[in-house]
Each structure stands twice: as structure tokens, then as C-alpha cells.
Length: 168
Image (cartoon, rainbow, N blue to C red; front, side, top):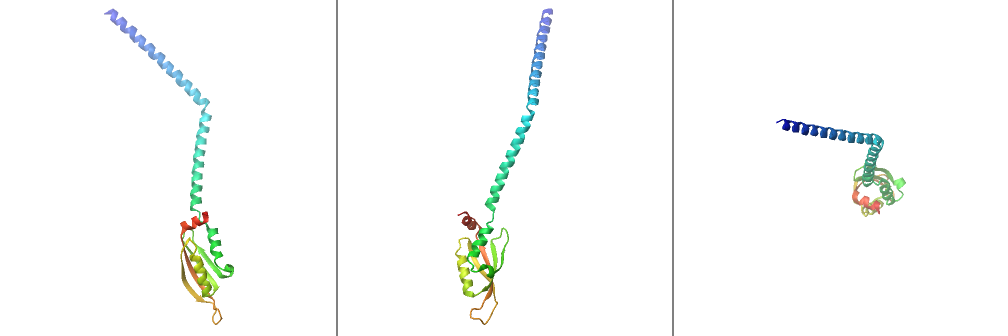
């Protein structure tokens, strides 16, 4: 029995020594990794900042692309509509377009009915205009050879077709 107890104690001591050295080795490895981490903490922080900036840049590019897709071509629309109204500086007294709206309101002054009909016909031929409606007409001068009127027009737009037209 003494021999068994002695063998047990030697085996237990061997296991204890092995556990001690394994623990010591693990602590040394952990200390080595900690020192490497401390040495490279600036690089890690810089890498994280670069990743954040890269993410912000990609989000910014996405937002810019969305804005460009949704951009309303106001300049093109006003210039193109004005090109179909002869002497528009003296005839157009009001031009209203709400952002995101698909309707333009125009008031034409000093225009006779044949000119107004010709303007409407020309506008209706545009691919991005669905319809032109006369809301009202009132006489501005009577008794002349060509009586002039004030016309209130509503132009219904097809925004997708307008964007395609601008892209050409």
C-alpha cells in the first residue's frame, strides 16, 4: 500500500507540475499577445477610423446618387416650356410649379385665342406633357381687330418622361 500511495503522490506531483508549466506558458503567451496589442493599438484605432470613413464615404455616394436620380430638372422644364410661348417675357405673368408636383400653372396675358390654341397644341406635342387644360379665359381688350385675353393653363407633366428627356 505504501508503494501505491507513493506512486499516487508522484503522479499527482507530475500532474501539478504539468499544470503549473501549462498555466505559466499560457500566461506568457497572453502577455506576449497583450504587448503586441499595446504596440499595435494605434494601428488598430487607425484601421477602425479608416473603416468608419470608408463607410461614411460609401453612404455619401449612395445619397448623392439618390439625389441625382430624384433631382427635378427645373431649368430644363422652364426653358423648354418658354420656348413654345412666343414673346414669353410679356405674355407669361405667372409660372407656378410646386416641388414634387406633376402640374405647372401658367397665366398667359395679351394673347388671342388662335395664339393660345397654337401654344397649347405645341405644348401637348412634348413627350413629357400628358395634358394641357384651360382653367379660365378672360378678355383683356374688347372691340379690337384681335381681342386679347388672359388664359389660365394647367399643364400635367409625366415626370418619368421628363427625366428621360433631360437625360438625352
